[in-house]
Length: 216
Length: 297
Image 1 (spheres, rainbow over the protein chains, first blue to last red):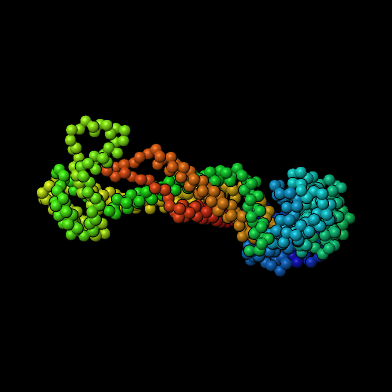
Image 2 (cartoon, chains in turn purple, yellow):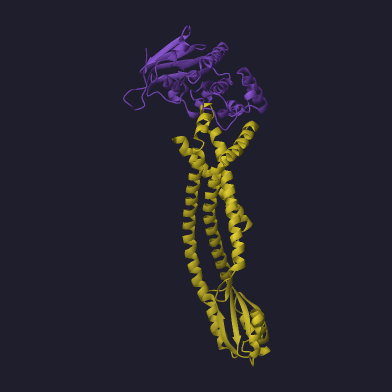
């Protein structure tokens, strides 16, 4: 599903963000990417999501070489990858329904179907009564769940989550993790980047640790 | 285009305009100024063109008589005139007719003429020469010939200064085309930057749309519609303001040069529509250029 071959990424500074990273994630895997702040976790997710391109090396996602992908192909690939950003990336002037519906609208789904799927997903995430709310009116946990709703509404092949519990209290953290596990059980490949050791305690999932841009 | 997309684009465009109404207002305001300068220039240009055509087309000649000509003299002059190509005899103006016209023109001040012991105005014959058939030298030949006829006092025609005027107009037209082109580019530049303001104010939104898998075209279309709407609004308002200024101007200003009175015309409906269409196209092109730059960076 995801293959990285000797990926090197530098932003021009002295210390490269990623050095010689090779990684394979199979379909249906649940992988934690961990490491201290600045280890390269977010850069690794950005490479997979193709918001950054490797300085050298190759990244293949769902069979596509990200070095050779054009804008249109990239847009279609992204529709198969759900992303939950650390800062949620919700549109503040659109309500919860509209934020979640966005992922379907860009694909040209008919409105009745969009309504049905959005209602269904929001209900699943416990946000049925928040449809008309705007992001600034929601708590951090609720915003995170809206971001997850938007990421999973298309039944993506891959779900990337960057510090999905970074801003949340322990109860909400457990709630969000439970959700991610449930999404995984439904067949989605999940990759979670986190620096929280608490999340990794007692987990039997695969853990990839990064330190100063290298896999250790 | 799928109906769902169409509905999305319309809804999105209207929502964007409403959400960013201040930026849009500034944008439309800037466009109004840019288009107004351009349209005003076009209006001046159209009028200059109109005056050249109006004055250049028929050439009028007046033959003034000493006293009142006898009928036989008048008929022989008319007969001779009709031998020249492109000549139409417009009318004979008797001394009394000339006085009556002058009284009408003076209106309330016509009483000034009551003190005159005799009518000093000459009788005249007005003729029109078609420019298509009249050579450049013919009016002069006619003038020389007519002035030899007994009873004819003087012959006047206005070709000399019209020729000079036309030469000036030709130069103005050339300058106009260059200047108009520059104004068009300036308007496009201003509009492009104005639209860029709108696009940059929604940078985050574009980023999110792209992250969830929107194609560039999907992101761009609402902006292109917005640009066109801005162009339409800016163009319409500029034309409305220009029309109001025109209405005020023609009721207050009376332009006249010598014997000729200059009537100011407004742009024809077809030309108005053309300018409006141009405004929409400029809005669209402006958006395309701004989006192109934005997506490259």
